[in-house]
Length: 298
Image (cartoon, rainbow, N blue to C red):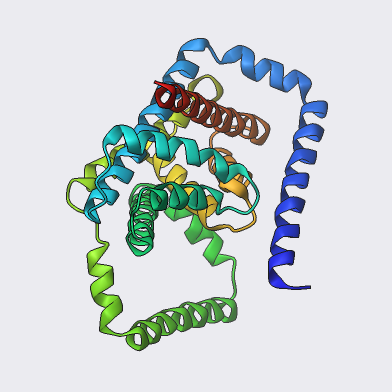
């Protein structure tokens, strides 16, 4: 069995497992689902939707900045339509169709393949790098005691093995960088984000993380810090992005957010709140795509 076939099978199995979990959960927790929704009023749902919308518009702006950085001159409205129309393709198992769609649209406009490639790589590296950095900065203090306690459970031999693995990865990365040489170094410098992209990226994660935080109040005795939720959201987004078998990070993002929320609420309620956040996110994407079709008709 070749790797590509195995990857496709794993993706479909993952989607089937998620669907099975949803059916099982909704069947066995009808009362809890009703109680959870009854506590959540219209206002936080509307606010969460507005925050997701703001975050998605920031991502459109990030695409616009990335294209300009590589001298692809598109208007913000063009970026808005291209970004939002192709984003829905990420839900198709394969995790590449949003990139294929955008690449095709831009190439049909006569833009060089290499330029498209570099702008897309830069755009997504900016997103992942900013999310990773904020995840470390915002959630580290909140999770530090938990991880210290977990580390104490491991034997010294196990910790030694983990340090060896980390050291091996670092040395391998350094060797790879040396082998690829100066050309890679200058290419890396070329894809660094302009200063104008930094506040856009920061606002993206503030809006998206806050979209979950504003729905928590009815279910917790002590509200978690908004910075903690933003940091965990960033981490969950990155993990969902890099896992190859989960389209749009479905299931991965929710699992990480659920685990993070169990420090403040019951796990069953956390599952529902992360699922609601995903539904809001998907609904906003649908609305944005429909608006793009309307713009194209005009």
